[in-house]
Image 1 (spheres, one colour):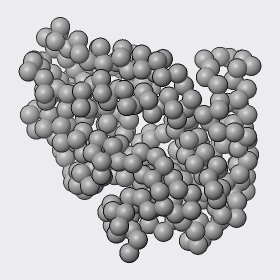
Image 2: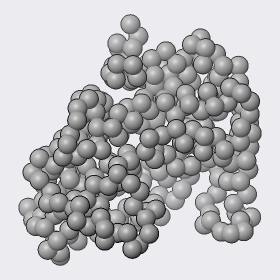
Image 3: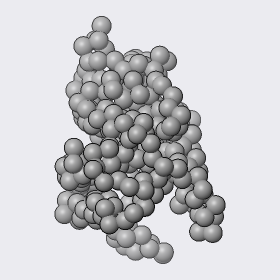
Image 4: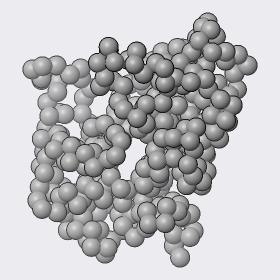
Length: 299
């Protein structure tokens, strides 16, 4: 798909999920897409990406884009196993020698991976996640972590949700602290605060709530520009982040294997191009690293 089509879909999802203005979100994507399209004005283009899922998905989109471009002279790639944004500016030149010319194999793998990510079913992602690609060393681990966000067999929980419920077994925890506890278990950065809070909302506001204590959905939080000290427009966010979250009887039942979250709460979300919805969605067996199709999950 073109940059514009993908950006339309992503902006629409983000705006709806978080209650943001579509035009403002879409404008951010337009700026990004404009920078990418301007590559033809340069004789050298370097792609610098980290090892986490957020960067790996952007990387495969760009590799897929450049695989179709007739002009891509001087394209180089630097693949980091550290967080570039946390590095001091004077450290950046030290990483420059690690940038190498993008190969045809990297372009083809990126094209294949992006097609798999945007497909209507997740089998292609699973096939790539099962392998090891020395030319894109962080892609398979990132995709395996992505697949773990599919509902698990039995519990119907994503890995993030399971870790969240287990973190609440000893008693209530504020939503903000819970974010730190759960995301601290990741090998590579995986979610920001709003992405994590959306997962809390799914468990808190369904037909059978697994957690309680949130004052409202994160979508109801007005947008704001962070400031120090916090302004009054940040009150909704602070109320959400400081709220004490606790397990419900249904949440405990899910942890005991007596209740299926996906089955009783009719979840509805997306994993790339795959819609995860209804009582019998795509699932993931974290023991065998296999995706389970809806019809098979019933058997």
